[in-house]
Image (tube, rainbow, N blue to C red; front, side, top):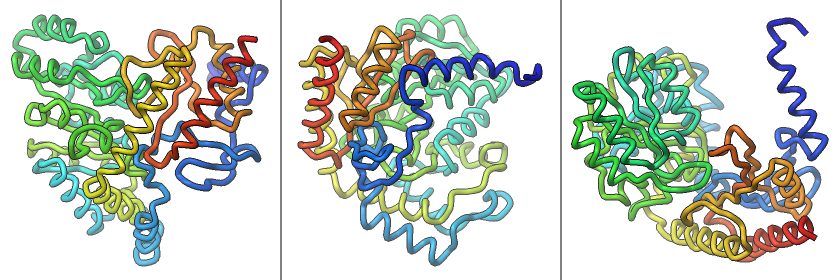
Length: 396
């Protein structure tokens, strides 16, 4: 192996060690999707309990119909960026509808949620600016911070006292500071202490960005996320989100009342140099956004399922995140125990996310479920039964 590729030796050894203990999670093949919650995986029927498909809209007939019609009328892709190839009418309509949904003046749509964070953070901040981020923020936020060239300071997860301390130290630099938190954190499903964060933002005169990727369609009376639920929408300068969770597609966005967001598309490299979202994705996302607003019963079913699974797993003695949410993660102390449990769940016909260090907080290992409004009561029962069965088998 050459020096350039030497860095991969350790990765290859780690993967080999993993495959000695279990199937490689990256090579588990979903051969056929049957519905929003079921698939054939490695030749076996499987309940999907790790897909982030919160409202279950990936198989919604109206979303599918809109996507098919768009392909037939506009083709399979845009073959270039909006800066080079122009904006389709659907791009503009989706941006307007998202802005109206959030009650904001401006919206930029990106090709993925990852690119939305990258493009917005790097466009808003630069050398001489400061970014204060919650330590548990998503990798896309960290990558956007690196791309920006700004000074990056982490504060302890959900520790607003630590946030205040760091803002005080910045003094006049607070005017050039962007605070970034998430609505729901993707590992343990806990909420940001957003009311307190917003109060700190007001006190010190900083700016605030909230990533509502996992909370769009999940939190708030109208599904606008934690900013709505916490009653601090007017304090949030920028909301970033994705179409790949509750809206069942791919793509991302940023909404704001600051006109600079509209100007940011002219300097945002992930916006300028990436092909724009294809017509089918835009079409299905627009229908899904409409359903999010007009079918609140989806959110009711989602939370019924989430609370039930959380309570059942907690009752079985699993160490879970601090509060019920559609992200329900069971903590394990040892990596080997986590891998064995994940394999046991696969054998029981339940697919969940296995998250090993360093991806999980505090060096722990997680088995993460993400609940959907499309899960039936019977499927929730079967997920619980699988966890109970594997726990009994491994402890006996």
